[in-house]
Image (cartoon, rainbow, N blue to C red; front, side, top):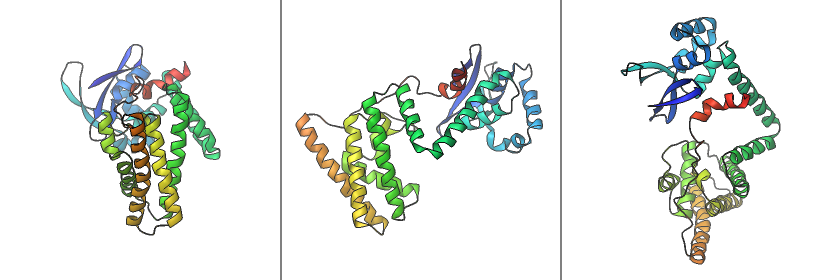
Length: 284
């Protein structure tokens, strides 16, 4: 159980859902913070009565979870994840909710622009990495790696591969041949314990380079041989990763150290506080 600050004088109870690996927040605390209502539970009832769509979807938005009350006792309270919380905030007619609404409108507008011009999405991603403190040369490699990865998944789709599970299996084959570890093993090696932590965001330059090499070679082989079965694609993934694996081992001989390392990039801002405060900060 943790508390997060939404405004200077208000705290929101939150709990980490281990099964879903995401934060859930007390709805009554959020409503009280945004409205200063003396009876936030009644306010929520009136809110639902005014917003038919919110009321109809309340069962999917609201998740009862146990939290500690002011008297120190644990009780089940109505909670929502980030997506559900933003839906509730959209229905609150309060000046304090306006920064969130404006921020959500801006995000929606930007996404529509990115659909028309994908280069804008890349620029936005670059800005996000810069804000997190990543060096520019690393960002360039990371963005290039994303493009290479997209080309590979497009190639797999052309070969009839559509299931996420199959993509994961093929990716694991490349990673195992390149680094001697599957992505899940690599995350454990780096001390990354949450599903929402992207392994590649915690790789250094050389790790990214060999990841790109394995995936690019796999794409080239697949385009050349045009595999017709999943097993054929699996063998090609292993071969592509093996090319990168051989190059990695030769590099390690020259450098006298392993390429894979336990370092990661975990900035202080990489937590659930930002998800709720970014709209307020944007307005300020």
